[in-house]
Length: 390
Image (cartoon, rainbow, N blue to C red; front, top):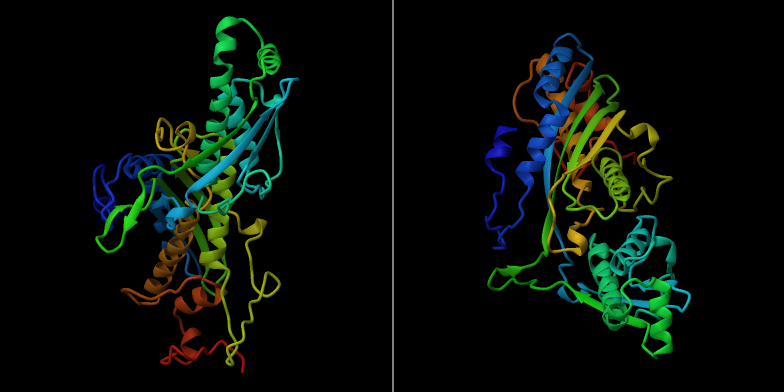
């Protein structure tokens, strides 16, 4: 923990690709997590548990993360939107992002309602289609709320500019009255919006520029219990503190953090890619390897959003969410390794040892060295997998 703290980035530091860090909240996130998860006490409790248990071991680990937001391919950092306002006051919004359950459409409705200062009930969304918003970028890199949200806001701002003289003449009028007046005065009630991240771009030849618009920060503390005889493990508790700026929708963001973490949990502990000796892929899908289920979710799972951390570089001071929390599941992996360390110490083995990711049951069991594991041959040929059936 102390080594990590000593190596944290600080405000104004340069990354290895020479981008200056602004709004660097990693220390704030870290310190808030330490307080919320009661790390020092639980670390002591884990040591106490391990001292009286030989074949069940617990481990705890705390991990920070930093994630840059933007497509590394510069041309992808653009988005468009189309907004129609109808004479009954209803608004139809189309943007370039794809809704896949991550709540993007909900956030875009909120952006439009806030920009136009009207109830959400008046906003309707049209499904993504290139006949309304052409040349869309992929809904990826956690940048969709930033890019499409700003495009929607810009389109709404164009309409508000046209309505400004009408609102000035009738300041106490309703939204529907202003729209009707605009229509009968032949003022366009349709607008497109276009946005691209400003000030980004990286030159690998000179190692200069800004490949990312800003950075997300987070930290997670996880506690696990392993069975030294079977290699099975249980995720007992995880606490996360995540910097999402001024959240557009806290409920969605917390759900995305939970989902990203759980996906990472699969990456670091379950989903092992296996090949036959002839090079054929065996793990061809969820039917051939383990993916996270409800029993893999930590028994206690808490997510906290960092407060008072506005981000001036994104829509309504928010930050992206989705991919940034995924790496925090490495806290599960390192908690498992911490537990294995205790098991090895009981077996009289000290020092550094190798544990490959994912930390599957087999790898956990074989890392907990005892008289049983010593009955298996030592793999001195990394290219040969003794676990593969010929």
